[in-house]
Image (cartoon, rainbow, N blue to C red; front, side):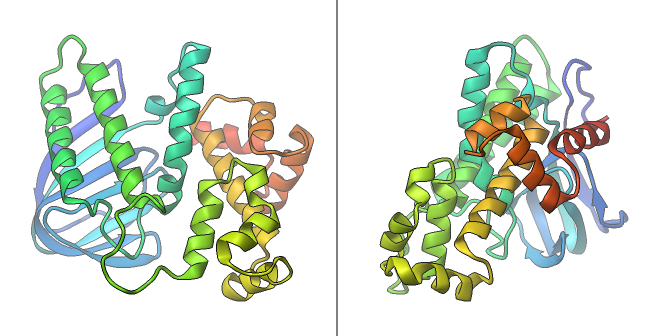
Amino acid sequence: MIAQPHFYPFEVHTELMNSWDLSPKVFNFFEIIQILDGKGDRYFNHMRLPYHAGQLLIYTPQDCRSFIIEEPTRFLFIRFSDVLFANCETNEERQRLLEWMKNLEYLFLNHNNADNDLVKNQLDCDLVKSLMSTIAIEAQNPQLYSRSNIQHSLQMLLNIFARNVLPEVTPPQTSAVQEPLINKLVGYIRKHIHETDKLRVENLALVASLSQNYVGEWFKIQTGQSLQQYILQYRLHLVKIRLQYSDLTIFEIAHEFGFVDESHLSKLFKKYFKDSPTVFRKKSSLLEK
């Protein structure tokens, strides 16, 4: 393992493993894993999926993960804490961070799914390999500006992951099979979750090519949830991310996501997650220590 400077919580190491002796665990850090060699299966929360050489995986805090190694596997681990997301000293930096996080929120909630390939574009795969190599070199030989270089490289990595996961950003499929309509509508909702006007029923009906009177009923048939319930729950999940990985006040978060006020947000948040936003943030902070 590469020893890291004490001034930032960051770790990079490569390890060849014949078996995974750890039971499935939840860690309190972000982790990017590149499968350099080998194959087997991986457990991610409640899913079991195959892994293969060259694959890239990302795990966020609270994700449960483990591996069943079929062939000896060489892993490249990059681990970092939420300091990367919350270390802002000026209002300008805070605003820049906020805009960046909006682009990553979909990634955080959809980063490991049954598709099993985080990066599908070959050019992006090559760029990711180069960035991960840069991070490893900077971490192994820390010097002036190493921390800044690592931070920027990690941000680039996450941006690349996001654009490979985000709807309406991935390259169009060449097959004649069209994207399911429900996926299109859900992708639209997630993409425009900060834009209340675009989530009005008339706009959602237009996206789905359905009548305003039927789109809500159709959505519930497809998902088991009403449109309003789905939008609210998705917003609340994003609120959780804000509480964990930003230093925005609850008032600021409520305003950003269109809640009437802080009290309104707190009431709904507690209804769905049992804790108030304040208690949830305190618990998250304690887990990270």
